[in-house]
Amino acid sequence: MTREEALEFIAQSIKSDVDMAKVADALKALEQKPIIDKIRAEIERQEKWLMVAGYNQYNVDIAFNAIKLVVDKYKAESEE
Image: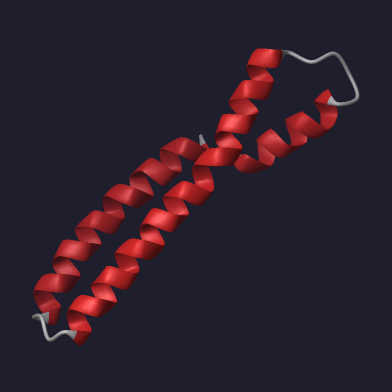
């Protein structure tokens, strides 16, 4: 369930009988996205710090691109 789908479901549920399991899923979906975005932002801050500190930019780029691919993979899965 995407964030947008969760919001729509909650908005419609207020008007009708509520399936509490679906409400729980919707709330879970709403909670997940900001956490993943915060993790990615922190990784990007660390990447910039390492480059400013003089680490080899090529090696930093390779390592952090691999990390960001993993984060993006799980972000996409959480939005499904």
